[in-house]
Amino acid sequence: MSGHRAAHMFAGMIGYLALCAAFVVLAHPLAARGHRRWARASRLAPVIVLVGFMASAASVLAFMAGAGLGLC
Image (cartoon, rainbow, N blue to C red; front, side):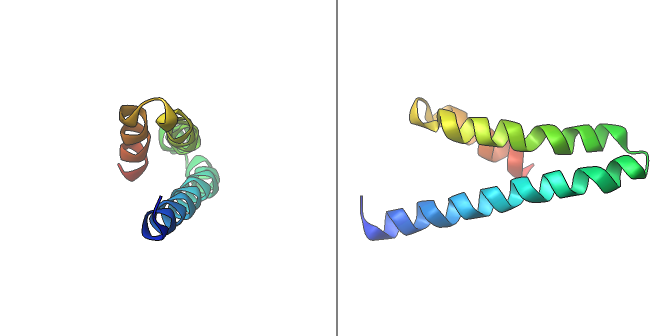
């Protein structure tokens, strides 16, 4: 693996972990304002994103699904 590819993968990992943390932090204010479905989705999305990343060793489609959900 080239250094450029390793740096790209590391930066992506940091970015998606930050996105997952933002989902978790956002869930509480959403629930407090009565947006229960959005709060539930904010709690579920990081789990799906992380599962997609863990499954990326077996399938590129799993990675794409997890990353795509996180960006949606």
